[in-house]
Length: 126
Image (cartoon, rainbow, N blue to C red; front, top):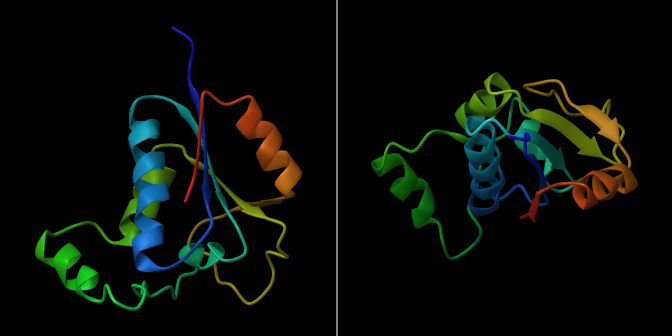
């Protein structure tokens, strides 16, 4: 059977927006798919060692709910993704800007991500 290709684009860094792309990437990689996880300018903070996920206004309860359910942290999910072979990319950003990345990520133009998405079996953006 042919290996599936999944491309996930993380567009935002708020707590409620950080979990979906990571969950999809981990789930797809755990099935043996080749997974590309790309981060936009607003989503790149998820890669920062100092990232503290904050929920959007009105859903502050989410932090406590995730803790109560013993959900893995954003950084834990990111580590699992890397262990499973997910490839990390940063879109259209000087990766030497003031971000101290938890894991290495290659800088690519958005055109590259979109070309990868066209050839993917699944493409998600959050």
